[in-house]
Image (cartoon, rainbow, N blue to C red):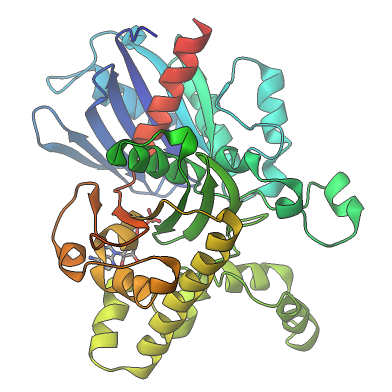
Length: 407
Ligand code: ADP
């Protein structure tokens, strides 16, 4: 496969924010990254970081909607002395992060028709907090960069290899056949990236690689990977289930929802808010930043200690489950804010797992590094890896792969 030179803009559109990175291929060099926040509010904030020359442009200005935000990004990229793009046509593609692809989208997809956009719009009911903003990102990118190919990369796509006996829920069939009620899984771009990077680092064939990947950020999820493919994952229909997260509970008895509604008389919006924003570490300790909670843990604060114990216990439980699901595990991979940076959490997760062939090297574990690295003892049967995730790069990689394949 020949790799031609191209610039790819990666966009991650949230309801009031727009994150972006401009990559140059085939070098995979980041030229610019940035973030526009508070879109639609009286004063928005723009942070545009230049990677080649260093430095940043910070602006405070009203950004009325996503189109104005993207027009501003285009101006910063194309005009003025800090411009990194001479001609808008140099940007051959825009790779969009789209949270939910349902069952229809199991691979990177060229969004080149209104019909395709409509298919995407129909999925918004599955991710009402995320997909509408992602779609707006595609709509405005078509207007601002009309000559660029628009490519959607889905958080759910990597998990479309889950077998039916894993993704189905034991509820009446019609909920699946008529409403798509099943597990989809999320953080797929990250799980895919760290799996490929882990296999590359270990020098093993990615299509023969079995791993358990543990993404611990504000959202947390785990994936069982067999021969490079996702065969089980901890999040389900939405990113609410599985591990304990910053502000989401992970697994709990669903009858809690009946109790909240029937007994505590909460309405659906209140329940939604409670489960998505007020639970998890935040519900247990009052805050969701794990660094703060760890400080309180080390000051012997009981609430923080219980929360950390629960957080680690849940991860260990999934490791046990996925070890059985996989039969053979080549590596356990830690990634994202907590997974990459907290030696304490990694040690808590890996302690006393000799029964599975896991032996952590505490010295390697506590070494300071931002690189992919191994942290197991020499005689550990399972490799333990820390792999910094890079979802933007993976979106750019997938966009480039798709464009090269259809050329
Ligand atoms: P997001 O899911 O928003 O992308 P990140 O992957 O950046 O989030 O992860 C954010 C989490 O990582 C926060 O809970 C933060 O406290 C935690 N974190 C970052 N650095 C450290 C660290 N050195 N030790 C412990 N936790 C950390």
